[in-house]
Length: 202
Image 1 (cartoon, rainbow, N blue to C red):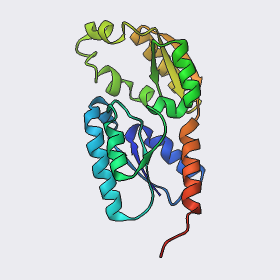
Image 2 (tube, rainbow, N blue to C red):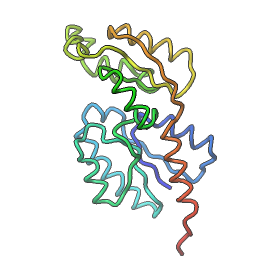
Image 3 (spheres, one colour):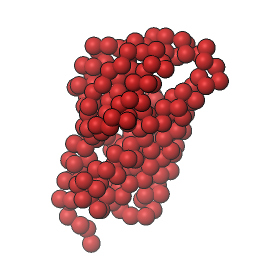
């Protein structure tokens, strides 16, 4: 089975592959920085699907949410006959749709971080938004936020401390929710079970 994923999910996908002994799972990731230019995602995913199909006939699952493409990614996937993980973004993958909706409705002004974004906060948040060059933009970007929610995949004291620091940097209240691999694990497990059960065609 082939999984085409956002680079921000690479660590978790590899960990799940190892934990579940999914030796036949073939993972390919697109650059995580595409999230800063979501208009590039649909075309990149289409090209990657075509490349997979040129290599084998295995099922393809796309591990992306809509990720800011405004429905364009789903248009590509419908045309290609490929499914993606359910959910709007990776926060929903990890927290689960129901829990994420409840969290977001409880405090709409929430900025979310995953393990990946905690580790690479400077690259994908601070510098990507130009806050290292123009700190005066902080109010424009985060003035309507009230808290930072760290959705943690691991129980790392180092990442927890870093996440608290990032909240202080942005001037937001800090909140923590341990998700582990959440719906990412559940969705992949279901898909893998179906894939393994399918008879081989000769």
